[in-house]
Image (cartoon, rainbow, N blue to C red):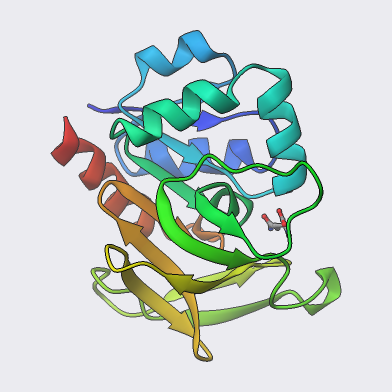
Length: 194
Ligand code: GLN
C-alpha cells in the first residue's frame, strides 16, 4: 500500500487524508523535511497559496520539496496546491514562490472572489462513469501550458485539470465531495511510480 503525505502547513489537510484513505492509500500529514523521506507521493491541499508559500519557507520545506518534485515524487495539488505546482504565477503576491512540477502559467482567483464560488460538473480525461462535481472556491485557472503537459479538463473554455508525468493538479476540490475517483487516479499514479 502506498504511503501518501498531505502537506500540512495550511489548508484542507483533513479532507485529503480522508479521501486518500478511502482510495486505499496510507495517508499522513507531512510538515518537516525529514518526513519527505517516508512517503511515496504527496498531496498539496487547497487553502491559500501565499500562506503555504510563506510557511514552506519558514519550515524549511520549500527547497527540499522543489528538489523531491524535480526528482520525480508523484504529487497532486488542488486549487492552492495547483498554484504551488506551477512554474509561474501570472499575478503573484510579492515574495510568493512555487515548488514547480508542471510547466504551466496560472492565474490566481481567476474565477472570481469567495462569494462567486460555485459547483459544476467537470468531465475529466481518464475518469470514468461521468463528470466529477467540481467545487471551485476562489479557484485559479491554467492560463497556458507547455508541450509536455496533458490537459485533462476544461470549464467554460478554461483549463482546470492538468497532468505532467507524475504531477497532477486540479483547480477544484474533489476532497470536499465524497467522490474519490480523482484521488484513486492519483493513488494509481503513485503505485505505478513505485
Ligand atoms: N485563491 C487561493 C489562492 O490563491 C486558492 C483558493 C483555494 O485553494 N480554494 O491560493
